Structures are given as structure tokens and as C-alpha cells.
Image 1 (tube, helix red, strand yellow):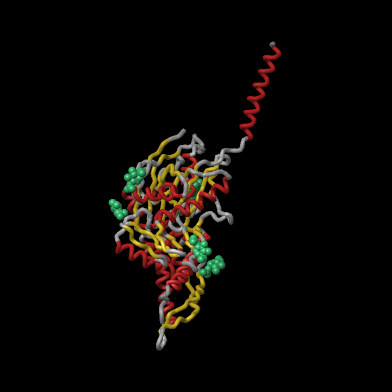
Image 2 (cartoon, protein in one colour):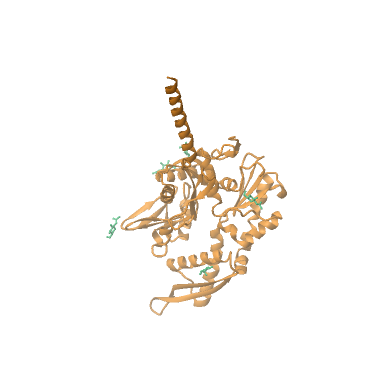
Length: 430
Ligand SMILES: *[C@@H]1O[C@H](CO)[C@@H](O)[C@H](O)[C@H]1NC(C)=O
Ligand SMILES: *[C@@H]1O[C@H](CO)[C@@H](O)[C@H](O)[C@H]1NC(C)=O
Ligand SMILES: *[C@@H]1O[C@H](CO)[C@@H](O)[C@H](O)[C@H]1NC(C)=O
Ligand SMILES: *[C@@H]1O[C@H](CO)[C@@H](O)[C@H](O)[C@H]1NC(C)=O
Ligand SMILES: *[C@@H]1O[C@H](CO)[C@@H](O)[C@H](O)[C@H]1NC(C)=O
């Protein structure tokens, strides 16, 4: 009897031990919630890995950590991200980008007509909302949230492939200045992609989290997202934002104006065909990126200029070549660069903060790589901005941290913040 008991006892002990050992060797739980950054020009998806305690920004099949926010419609299908962008040259009128600028926003007819003129695709007015007119086999309209949903779907699939499990829940970031309607339509885009949004978080808050906002020793974080500056502080409950509506596109536009004028000087006519303008814009965009690393860049752009013959319009093939320097780029944009400091000053005044009280100055978005912008910010604060996080991935990193919190896998002893829709508040989980 006693022997039997002790045998049962040891069986139970063995089972318990097996359970204990099993737990030790069990693979760490897969992330349940993904973090999404649906950007104007690029999108990224990230997760918090409970096993390693690291943030993983998920790459595509070729390891690229962001996908262009571009969706192209063709007679045979809808292509998103890099595949969509590859069609922007041959299918410009059906290749939609910048959809985030239109999502959930109310417009008047006149504004949308002006906007439409800026793009190779047609933006139309539908009862206060913007839609895109697409012509493949048939002609139809597409909403900005549908464009968003295709990008989110692509990222959902990238995450599922990487994690090996279905993904249904996400946290998503939006610009701090998005109103309730814009937030709702962003959520709708995610719902269309089969994703349930557990929380919407402000982009500057996400960026600040990526830089250690949730750490006790960091009190005031100033986030510079080019035109939009925000300060996050342990003392102030509310995020403060100053905005001068500046974006990377504005710098490209200045360079485009300059090169268009150079074409006119060299060949007597400026480029007028939409395809030419598009090709020149792309070349100028690439040159702008190069100039953040190199002092000069050589432009080499084939164009089909329309010159007027005696009886008819002639299309003349020309090769436009031009040397662009960083110095020239800075000169063309200096007045815009100077405007970057204004929202920074505004948030400091509103937050009753001195420059010296800012613990971390962090940069968000690719344009903050422009050397002149970094220089202006360092001069203003008398210290270098913190560049330990890639400015293109700062937002997604923070959203992934928030996704980890929502999924319950963020270590409990770490204090983290709860972010209700529009306002910031600090909550200790520990
Ligand atoms: C569009 O037309 C092409 C060629 O006629 C056809 O192969 C394709 O299936 C059509 N696509 C759709 C969506 O109907
Ligand atoms: C147009 O928009 C208004 C306000 O958003 C809405 O009340 C109305 O139902 C819409 N009309 C149509 C035809 O969709
Ligand atoms: C946003 O969505 C919420 C919840 O569905 C709803 O109560 C609210 O009226 C919506 N607001 C706007 C401006 O669309
Ligand atoms: C920049 O931020 C990282 C991440 O929070 C931190 O570890 C590092 O100390 C900061 N560096 C500087 C120079 O402020
Ligand atoms: C930009 O630089 C890369 C190498 O750094 C080069 O391959 C590329 O052609 C350059 N682009 C332009 C537009 O000059």
C-alpha cells in the first residue's frame, strides 16, 4: 500500500518535473499582436519577441524593412509595395501613392482639383471625400482606405509568413494631428485587411517609445518629425505638437522646379508630358536621397520634349544631364529648413521647457537624414540628436513595443504607457 502510494507520488512528481522541464524548453510564445506604421511614403510592420525581448521589424522576401506606400491597378491584378512601385513608370495613371494624405479627410471640390493636378493619377471629389479614378479593363473609383487596406494586407501577410501563425490583431500609428474621422478611416482600412485594431497610437509617441520613453530616467523627449515636432514628457500629461506642414516632398518640389527651369534653358522648352514630369520627379527624388550622403550627384534623364514644328507638334527625344550639388540643394531649400525650428520653439514654450531640459532629441522620418537639418537641430540644442534608432523605423519600433504591451508579452516589470485615443497618460504595469 505504502509502496503504491509512493509510486503514485513519484509518478506525480515525475509528471510535475516533466511539466516544469517542458516549460523550460518550450519555445517562447509567438507575438499575438503586430505593430503597423502606415506611412505616407513607406510602411513597416514590427513585433515584440518575448523570447529575446527584442523588437523585430519584419522584412519582405528580400529583407527590405519597409515597403513603399504604393498600390498599382492593372488588368490582371492589384500590386502593392515594391511591386506596385515598379509599375509607376509604365502605369502612372493607375499607380496610387500618398493615399494617406486623403484618408478620412473632408475636402472641398476646389482643393481636390488642385491636388489632382499634382499627381499622375486622377483624384476626384465624392461628396466631400477624395477618391481615385482608375482605368484598367473598366473604369472605377477607389477609396483612400482601400489603398491603405492593400498595404496593410501585404504587411499582414509578411508578418504571417515570418511568424508562421495567422495574425488578426494589431496596433497602428497615425499622425498626432489626425482627427477622429481620419482615425476611424484608418481603422476601417485595417478592418478591410482582416485586422482588428486594439489601439491607435500617435506617431510621435511611438517614436518616443522607440527611444526609451518608457524608461524612468528619461523625462523629456522631443520628437522632430520634420514639420511636426512633439514633446513627450513624464511631467506633462498631454502631448504638445507644433506643425508647419513641411514634408520631404517639399524639398523634392524645389529641386524639381529648378531642374525644370534648367531643361527649359538647355532645350528651349520645359517638360510638359505627364510621363516626362514623372520621370524627372523620380530622378530628382533619387538625387535628393543621394545628396544626403554625397556632395554631388549627376542627373541623367531621357525626355520626350514637345517642340512646335511648322505645322505640327513634334516630340523630340533628348538627354537632360545636370550636375547637382548638396550646396545647391541647401540653397534652394534654406528658407524651408529654417522653418523646422518654429514648431520646436512652440512646443518648448507651451510645455514650459527650456532647451536644456530636453533629455533626448529624436528624429523621425527619412528627411531628418538631410545633413543641413541635423546641423540646424544640433546648433539649436547645443547637442547632437539621438540617432540610435533608424529614423525610418522609429515609429514602427514604438508601435511594436505597444503591440507587445497589448499582447501581454511585454515584461511586466517594465513601466509602460497607456495611450487613450488622443491623450497620453503614464501607467505602471509593475
Ligand atoms: C482584362 O482584360 C484582359 C485581356 O483582355 C484579360 O486577360 C483579363 O482577364 C481582364 N481582367 C479582368 C479583371 O477582367
Ligand atoms: C454626403 O455626405 C453627408 C455628410 O457627410 C452625408 O450626410 C450624406 O448622406 C452624403 N450623401 C451621399 C449621397 O452619400
Ligand atoms: C468614429 O468611430 C466611433 C466608433 O465607431 C464613432 O462612435 C464615432 O462617431 C466616429 N467618429 C467619426 C467622426 O466618424
Ligand atoms: C539614445 O537613445 C538610446 C536608446 O534609448 C540610449 O540608449 C542612448 O543612451 C541615447 N544616446 C544619447 C547620446 O543620448
Ligand atoms: C546614387 O548613388 C548610388 C551609389 O551611391 C548610385 O548607384 C546611383 O546611381 C546614384 N543616383 C543618382 C541619381 O545619381
